Image (cartoon, rainbow, N blue to C red; front, side):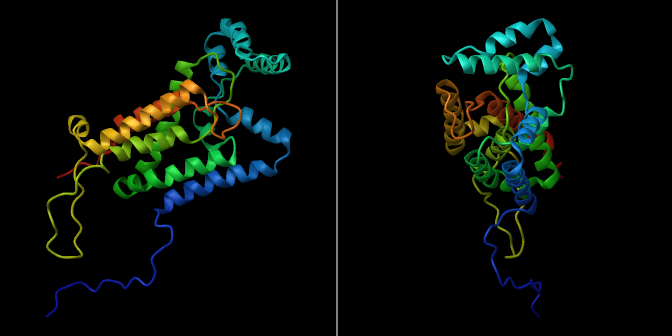
Length: 270
């Protein structure tokens, strides 16, 4: 008697082998940016002001005495007098607001500066969000991404509190997923082999930090990621994300949050 289970026959292999929640996340990011393209300019600017994270808004809410320093910082590093005046006028409007808009700590992750910015982020989301979902499920994936976005905004506020430039993009949340994936995707496969073809081997535990530092592939990935982000911060490349430079500090904040939060989300093992 054949004791093997009657497994369903798979007729087709999906073209995009991504978990549904990752596909949905990508659809949301692309859809929001597509909607912004057809909005009247005034509505789009208002959406940017209401949803983007702006450090100066929080700084003046916590310390109103910093208002003048924020206006002065808005014009630094610019040679065009008209641009200086425009940015300082925008900064004056910001510091005159009474609300810090706390939702912007998360909502800025839904906006992007250009189609290149969107495409760049969704590629990395597909690459690193998928293994996180397959190992931890949809809700832990969502928690990691959200905490990464919030941590990225908080670290950006800490590093550049006088900035009146709007921060947008899901990069901090994706950086958290990258850091989480780095804790297990570079681990060598377990030596155990299931007795039957349909049995799935148990997921190996996360690598500890000492183990991770002895893993050449993981160290190479972490070194390249940190090096490129610091380089972008030093030379201020926009990379198609609008007129503003890459917010390397937001990326780093999200990455650190994902790296150290993941062990807390690890399911208990018997």
